[in-house]
Figure 1 (tube, rainbow, N blue to C red):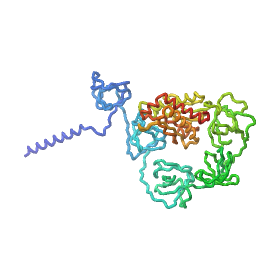
Figure 2 (figure 1 turned 90 degrees about the horizontal axis):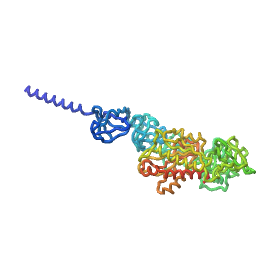
Figure 3 (figure 1 turned 45 degrees about the horizontal axis):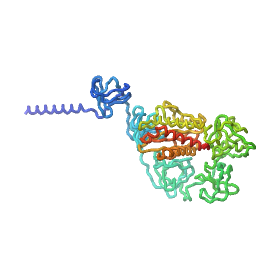
Figure 4 (figure 1 turned 135 degrees about the vertical axis):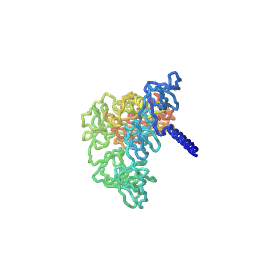
Length: 608
């Protein structure tokens, strides 16, 4: 009996030893894999750990390999699903620091526009998309100066330099209830964002302006209200930027207010403005026009931009859009006469604004600089001159500075607005996007920063060929300017306009060219951007009739939003599309685009 017990105990002990030894050789599944970086110019990976074995493949300097094990002076490594041997002499261990967090504990916010989201944590990695300034994404992990993020549609890596990481507060869905009947929300902010959900991070839908009265349909417990901002369209706005009150609905959501101080409207529309019986272009005409250059006091103002005035004893509404004139609390008066002799206004130095009326209170239509001259149409009593600024637009320039002079002798240099086919006297900044450490998008064997520079130089040559002056933000791929520096460059150079050149990246099926201007910029660039885009469109359609025109769009890219002059951002094709990448990397396409840009400039400045 004791013998049987002893044998049983011995068997059990042996089994336990075997079991523990089995677990001892199982590697930790969570152990970090060691990475090795190649230090030689090129390194052979062989089938065995000796120099006489067969070479499987050769890798270049700085290539990263995954360590399997070490044998003497050789490492067994993995590279592109292949396992082989490489000399340890030419490999060094990569020290990696990885920090991870719960996907719900942190958020990543972009500090810049057009931040590339890349496939891996390398500047040479393919761009999967962009993250604009102020936009957020979910934090996944951080590694060697890069942050892995997840947006609603993309998971990838962004440079840690251009983002901030913060703790994400735990949020609960707000309680939503139906609003009282006939509850209206009146906007008190100058401009208020309408979003898809009661949350400042939700999708942008539209802007509503000060004094607009919007019908409220639902109320959220986090101080947001759902409103009807267009016919049949609803969205959410923050309730702290308006007031709520129950009232009987009027004929529309438009509210009317009386200005707090005496305000005048100055008509700059050459054909004048029709007085109507209501604040709508479809309202009945009262048979009276407010003529060009007339000043009228604003008695009432509707939230849709129409104003109530009295002219020649007729009271009614006119369209008070900034397109047709401007409002000012200044009481501006002037007289103007045609010169008795033909005179010319000549810019000798510096830069001056061209304005809609002879006063600094009037909005700027553009700028003129050294070398420009114009025939004087009228001279005001405060020493401003009216000129034909473009073939379609007149404007006023101050003659009260040392930057200019007026002469009866026609200048010998042909730089006036009337000269067709010439951009002489016009100064343009061409911005080749990205540069140096910032490659931009990449794909199909092309890199955006290089494509941008080649296209920018072609545009530069085309502009200079017709007499224009060009300032480049960079002239090689080793130069780099921040977005702030790029946006300020035109002002530094006294330029008339700014053109930023880029190439796009998205899904492999995305194709075509597009252009962007900012609707939020202090300087209105829509007409300038339209002229440039239409010039490119006409030129491309002639040479490449099937290439996709993705149209002109409004988007607040930093370099156009914060520019001091008219500006446009061009996206000339998709490097993520194999056909586009092949096309945009040809001199013929770049020459076509440059031709289109010049034609657009000639059209905008009335020299076509």
